[in-house]
Image 1 (cartoon, rainbow, N blue to C red):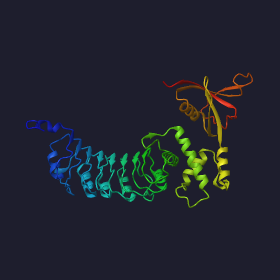
Image 2: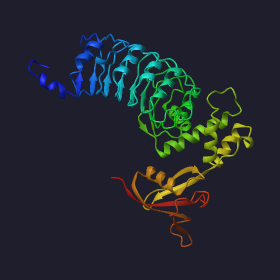
Image 3: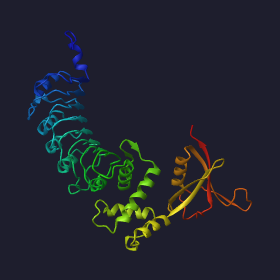
Image 4: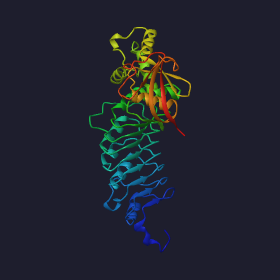
Length: 374
C-alpha cells in the first residue's frame, strides 16, 4: 500500500504476503487489525515466530481463509493459529513440520470446513482421529504424510458426520485394512489414495479394491465412479474374497460386513455353502450372472453379464452407458428372431422388474428406443 492509500485498508478482503521476510506473527496480526474486512490471508514461505498464547490484539475475527505453506511451522504453531482465527473456514498448512494435531483439533473453530495438512510429518492415525471434534470439517487433506495404518478403535457413533472428502495419497499405507477402516466415515464420498503401498502396481487393481470395499464412494482419485465401475469393482472384489476364504493368512480380505452386503446384493450363497475348491467357487460366481443381449433398433447386439437382481432402472443406466445415449425413450424385451411372427415383444415399464423375475432367456434381446448423445 503506497503512502496516501491508507484509506483503502478497512475495505481490503484478500491479502497475499507470501515469500517475504516476515518474522513475527504477533506483530503482523496486530498490524492487520486495521484490515477490518480481511477474510483471506496468505503467508506462505515466511518463517514466522508464532507466540503460543496469542494476545487479544493478535486475534483476527473476520479471517475465513488462512494459507501458510512451506513455512517450517510445527505442531504448537498450528495450535496457536487456530486460537487466533475464531471464524476460520479454510486452513492450508501444506509443507510444514506438523506431526501432532491434537492441540490443533482441540482449538479448531466450529466454523472450520477445509483443512490441508498435506506434506507434513503426521505418522499416527491416533492424532488424526482427534480432528473428529471439528464437527463441521468437510474436506481433509493428509497426502504426503507418514501414515502406515488407519485404526477403527477411536471411532464412535456420531463421529465425522460432515467429512465428505479425504486425501491420503503418498502415505506409506501397508494393507487393505486401511481402506476398510474408511467405511466407518459415514459421509465419505470422495477419496484420493494413489501412491501408497496398498494393492498391486496396477491402477485397475487399486481402483477395484477401493470401490469394492467402500459402497458410498462416488469419486476416486478425482474420477467419477460410474455404475459400470461399481458393478465391475464389486464383482472383482467379491470374487477375490471368495477365492481367498480358505486362506486365513491372506490379509485385507476379512471385511465380513461388506462381504455380507455384496453376497446379498448379487444373490450369492452363504459362506457355509461355499465350494471348497477355487474352480467350483469361480464357476458358482459365473452361475449367478445372467447373459444380457442389448441393441439399438438399428444397431448390432452387445452382450453383457449382469447380476440376476439387476432391476430395470439399473439396466437402463447400463444401456445408456454402453451405447452413450442421451436419453432412453423405451425398452423392449424380445425372444426369437425379430422377423419371426411368433416372436414375443414386451414393453418394459415396471422399474422394479429384475432380470431373474422377467425371466431373461439366453437368446433374448433388449431393444432400446433412444436418443443418442450429441
